[in-house]
Image 1 (cartoon, rainbow, N blue to C red):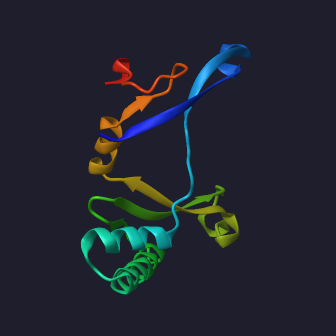
Image 2 (image 1 turned 60 degrees about the horizontal axis):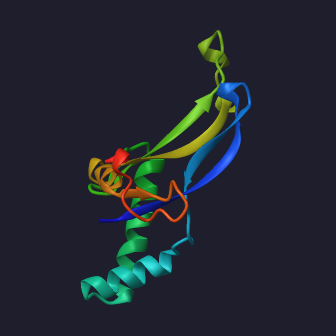
Length: 138
């Protein structure tokens, strides 16, 4: 079973009148590069890195095209991608224009399968030297 580790820090919490309290954050390790994903996938699936890379970059281009056309792109066990904007309001419709757009973003929603895997992972490290299961989270 995968294990997520936390760092525990003491910080001021605004909700409690800036009282110092302990809070846990997931520990991040290194960033896994696209090249590493391609190498690992090729190795585990017995497919050449060139074929995986070709398919990967073709998939990325296809996702980009569909998202920028306004589609919600469903990648099955990974999740969905969609474009979104924030826009300032106007009293009259004719006053709206592209100048009202204040933010553009790509929104990713993980699949249920990916979220379930996260919830099934052990979370450890709340106490010094704690590498065992934290029962209260299961």
